[in-house]
Each structure stands twice: as C-alpha cells, then as structure tokens.
Image (cartoon, rainbow over all chains, first blue to last red; front, side):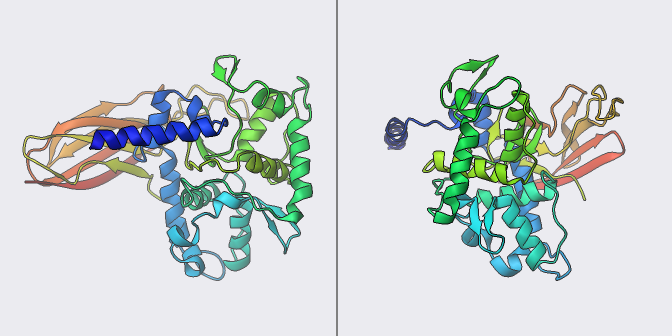
Length: 252
Length: 107
C-alpha cells in the first residue's frame, strides 16, 4: 500500500514537471544538497526561521508591541503573504519587497528603528514569514499600478550590463541548464528566498544574490533596497508565477 | 543571546535500539586565514570541541578544525540504554560555550 502510494506520488510529481518546463534551482542541485534542504533538521536556514519566530513574538520598539500583538499566529495570518510580494504600497506610492514591508511595519506600528538590509533580524523575520507560504504557488498580484514597474524589471533583466556586457537573460533564459565554469546555470526563479547559500556560508536575500551576479559581469550592482531591485524582483516573481515556494531553500 | 542550535533525536526508544542524533549549531567558524575588508587577517573563531553525554557518560565527541563549514552539522548514533538526559556541549575560541539538554524516554 505504501509502495503504491509512493509510486502515485512520484507519478504525480513527474506529471507536474512535464506540464511545466520551468525548473527551480532545487532541480539543478546535487542529491546531497537537495537532502539538506528537504530535512528541516539539516537545513541551516531553519536556524534563521527559529530566530524569526522568536522575533515575531518579542515585544519591541517604542510602542512595546510584537508582530504577534497585531497579526496573531503567523501560521494563519502570514499564510500566502510571501507568495504575492513585491506588492504595491499605496502609502508610499511604490512597490515594496517582503523585507521592506516587514521593516515598514516595524517602524510604523512598533515604533522601532529601521533594520539594515541583510541584517540577521530582517532575514530571520523574512524567512519566518516566507516559511508560512512554503508549498504554495508564487502568485504575483495583477495590480495595474505594478505594471510599469514590472515592465522596467523585464527591461533590466534583458539589458546588457557591465564590462562583460551580459544581460541576466543571456545566461538564465537562453543558456539555462548549461555550465558556467563548474556550475550549472539555473533558470533564475526566486522560489526559496531568503536562501542559505553554501558559498556564502550564510543566509541571504534575493537582492544579495542579484548583486552577486551583477558584480560577476563586472557591473556596478544596484544598491540594496533600490527601486531597480524591486522592479527586478517584480519581474522575476511574474516569471516564476505558479512555482512552489521552498523557503528556506539551500543553494550551492 | 545564546547561539542557536537545532537538535533532532527521537523522544522515545526501545532498550538497545540504535538512535540517530543530529545537532546543528549556528557559528561563523572563521578560519583565521581569510583577509578581512581592511586587508588584515580575520582572527580565528571556531568551535574546538563537541561532546555529547548520555546520563553523564560520554557517548560521542568530536574535535573541530578550521576547514569546517560555518554552522557545523554533526550526526551520530548511539544505543538507547535508559531514560534520561543527553547533554550537548560545544566549546570554542573566544570563550564560546553552549550547552543544550534533551531528554529521552526508553521503554
């Protein structure tokens, strides 16, 4: 019976893959790294998630409020939230990434100080919030106010930059699955951010990853939190729409 | 704030059963060989020892060295003998010391 069930699961999984030609970075990894991501007790990203849970429940800021004071149990209130970010923020008149949303909420409602990009606190909260959407399909909102930003994101993705004069698309769309040096070029679907990257020996956001590629082609990377970064995130989310969220993912 | 650790082991076991224990701890494991942003060598900061004691008896120990990755993950097996506590201790440079305790029921 168990065996039949396993066969069924495998059949469904391969059918789902056949239906969708896109592949997550997970599919390009070695079996060892895949096992590391699958097992929450081996996945170092869970250390940040654990921190994020503590921060979620800890009172902070001038108002002495915790995230949980307003949002309650993250398992219900934050389910699916990460799947739809970046989203448009009417108050600021621009799209915000998940990290910026968390930081804005922290400053506005908790009276806290801004969290630095890539800080342990921000990555932990982001990982904890995104974990609540694990397994759900990426669902970028069809908000007309986002269209112009997303279109600019597509242009950034296709624009040649840097001394090496490469665009994101030349590697990650035209030559995905091929090798660059010893590593396989993945398709650049942001399915598991923030990720634990073995190369970094650390947790990092999508923007850190994007900056890594930009300095790789010897371009000046966009700053953390810049609108260009958000635009790229918006386009990448649309490109990966429907793919499952894996946060916290492990990548080589 | 103590370092973060994730320990996985079965809460219950039969006498004589081999149980697997997995311990992951957050630590930078700075090798002492890398240059920092200012050009100087970053001082070494690693975990030196890991010890697991089962009701006071050492069942596993490891020495860690500079080439080990950040956030070291150690998995090992032991025999479940009696109910009690497993005490995990990590010790390292800069007076790093962390102790975690997990209990097991053997019936």
